[in-house]
Figure 1: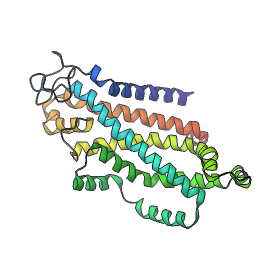
Figure 2 (figure 1 turned 45 degrees about the vertical axis):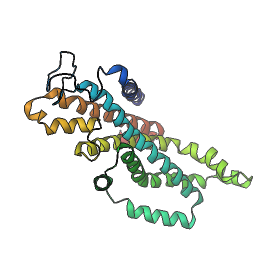
Figure 3 (figure 1 turned 180 degrees about the horizontal axis):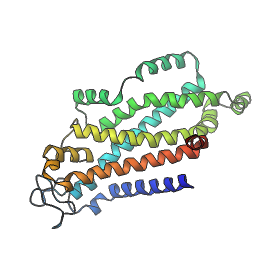
Length: 273
């Protein structure tokens, strides 16, 4: 019962974030880059969260920033899970020499920390948000391939798969009708956990300033507030809203992953008790 409540709560929070991002032009009173008043105004006077150092409305930036933040979080996770599911399923089903070679390559690449590697690559190539999302998704799929391959290999040796092969079913039919449906719990949980991971990672890259500084997202908002001394000046309305937004969606994704893991694998809940 508790896990169902947590799952519903996390889904409701995520739906709220997506609704805000989708309806940003209707919610935000100004555009993200529009100068709307005097610099560093406190909340009030037509500015729900005040203004930043150049007079831009912080609430409007927060709303529009949700779009970019969700793109590199969920977009990277979607790409990573798609690559992981395809490659892991094919390797686990067919096996053989190619599977052994790919697994050895993955063993070499997996110890490489993703975030420092992303810092180096983004600093060298200076990519945009979409390119960074693709890069995060491709690099993140390395761990996912091994995660998907193991159950795919086990499923390929089950009696119902062997029976399907014996009656002449095609490999595509077996993979799409017998193996992939049984992998969906793992794929779903992986997507949720990856979304949280990449969203926080993208905010970190933006905070460091490794892509276009004109792009408004929650990481760049926090970086901008920190650079202009919002903490030391007591300008809480500038730095707290994007920070709370990041923490809120991160906790929602963590709760969703926690609940899905217990639903799909009840033994996890028993072990925690």
